[in-house]
Length: 322
Image (cartoon, rainbow, N blue to C red; front, top):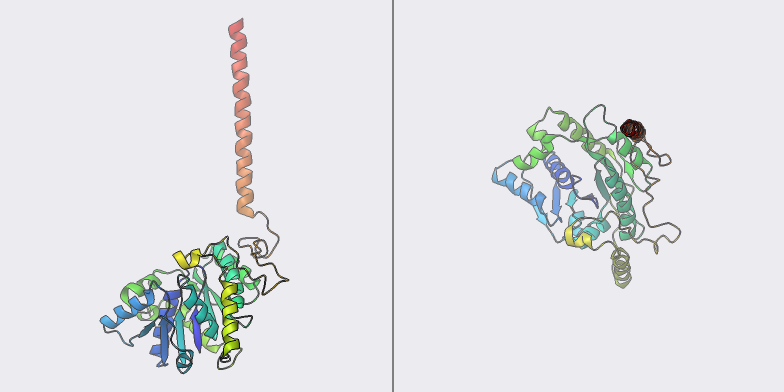
């Protein structure tokens, strides 16, 4: 099973999730291959730190470029961490993936980015994408904060992915896991963070891939090469800033008009709106209304003050004239 942990947007916790998954699988004595295609090499660094400290099980990370597909498919479990700074390796990993795990942080930018990523996935794989599985990562742990629920509602309305109900909260132990070279369930085995991660992994393990044991092998020969070249040309219209800086331009739509001529290639920001009115027609929420009301009262008070000031000045002038 080849699992690619990916997202077009940076800062969603891809490397952290990949590292913890790798330790979990190796601890369960599952033969696992870990590939680091992110030029930042964060996953490689934390694996090296773990090896230096002699922590078992050791995580051996294969750096880029992507090794042969047949070799990866011979391993029971393969985890691939990708980054948008190396766009070519990013696309190659998506083409061979059995499933793509998408961590999404609860923000409007991430909702739009996830929508773009789903269309990007369709284009790269020539309309035959792997399973796309999303989950809320770095969710706010406060009971009165609805940000994660609102983000989940927006993701549920997004076609092309399935959203897991399990979430990983924004906790310090996830940051500490990298500095210590240990997974969260090794650092704090009885913590809420460990319980959340265990539930997420168990859910992923129970999911059945729509391809069964894996996706069909890619064809070989001139026709396959021609198809690959065509897909590269279609995806090459993505913002150049991705390859240069690793940051995805939120205003640049993915050009999929040729692949889907009847569908608009731009992001429908009203349909997948994040916030209190997500899933409904775009409008103002309670906070906006309260702010508008306060602003209105402020202007009314200001007008009254100006009128009073003018009246006072007029009265003084009239008295002076007498």
